[in-house]
Amino acid sequence: MARSDITIDLGAVRRNVRVLLDALAGAELWAVVKADGYGHGALDVGGAALLGGATALCTATVSEALPLRAAFPGARVIVLSPTPDDELAAAREAKLELVVSDDRPLPEGVPVHLKLDTGMGRWGLSELPTPQTNVVGLMSHLATADGDLAFAEQQIERFREATAPYTGYTRHIANSAAALRLPSARFDAARCGIAVYGLSPFGRNPADDGLEPALAWRSELAQVKRLEPGESTGYGRRFVAERPTWIGLVPVGYGDGFRRHLTGTRVRVGDELQRVVGTISMDSFAVELPARLPVGTPVTLIGDGVLADDHARVAGTIAYELACGIDARPLRAHRSVVGA
Image (cartoon, rainbow, N blue to C red; front, side, top):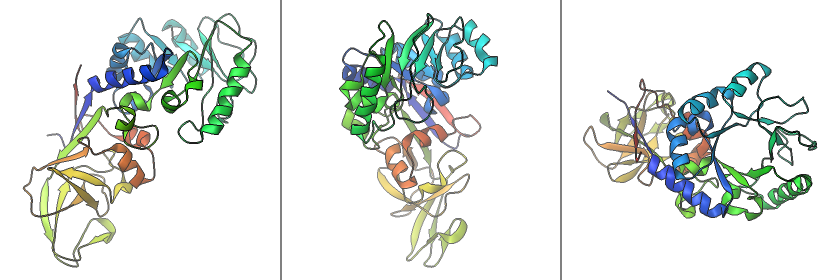
């Protein structure tokens, strides 16, 4: 029997794509589905994004791209990270598009995007060479579109100046945050990841930007017990009852992706938000209850107003990392797809 249930709403993915397309005002949207679609399922999300109006899918590696090519033979599939030489033949056979971010000779027989480092300080060419015949795109990546907009605008202007001499190439620099906030970053296409899944690139309520979280994660109370004053729950006695306290044990832990740093966050037990207490174990966590509740009471970890972004603030991380860390394998959870 499943310890938890994960539901992916593909209708929400399609609606998020349309929200982003409206914001882009004519630029294309390319859906980033690396890391198995940020933990949501790359094939499911990729198909929904294409149906919603996305015109390309982006991955980090060739191995991530190959199943997408098999599932969507007519779609553009772009590999964003550097491709090792021993994977070029597979990329060429699968008709993938590759990103080149150093000064090695361009791979032959495959469409290429040249990546310029305009301030990210990561992958990217320091200067843009004259594009060769198999170059189809010119790109860069923004470091601060979710915060320091002044620096983002500097990057955008550097990119604009560097690419101005070249025409006929698809120019793309915008991510989700820039698509929603920086009209100057639109160019010809935007590579959007987190917002496609209905998570906020700004770490706040995604509804503020018209986005709907696609992932819901639910479990139930597996045991309910009363702690007397001075009694504790979990490793290290991080929670010691000061008064008679009912707690519920939920059969989900950091082995499932509910991180150890989420002590103190809130989940929905029945219809009310309740506080997670004590140390989160590999396979369970405890939640403080207002009274004795029956075993089997539903617990919502994400969904129904419980936001991954709220959990991320408690854990000192970002919703991207939490979503990627959820284990949806059948050995740990039951996964279903709706809205197909």
